Image (tube, rainbow, N blue to C red; front, side, top):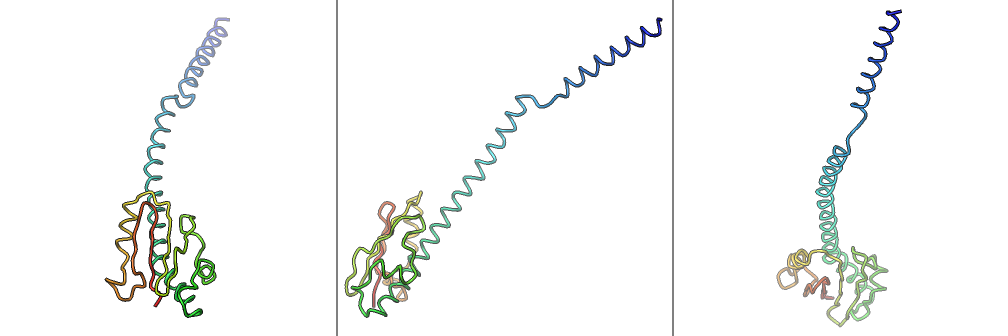
Length: 167
């Protein structure tokens, strides 16, 4: 009988040891989970800020392309059909391939059309007005580049105003 009791005692001791081992290896502690989430949050924050800046830079470059190439091309097509600048309006420019909104989704307008120039107001939602001012400063005008159709270009707040030559 003593053998049975000693065997049972060993089984009970082994069971207790297994329970302690299972409790010890049960999973992550709350502190470990919180630290892991904090590290992930920092990594995502760094990546997201770079991604948003890249999107803003892409919009600025797309706006530059529209202002320097798309608008002058559409204006020249309208002028070549109508033989006058005074008939240039937003509907005709959109019919010649211009989108009716800017790259930020705002509506650009034709501010005025004279016999020699057309003024376009190009509102933006640029987050950085310094980048917008740099964009405007980097666009050549007719006075500095005779191949440019842009007479003047200015940035005021978050809006760009461009006067295009018609002739």
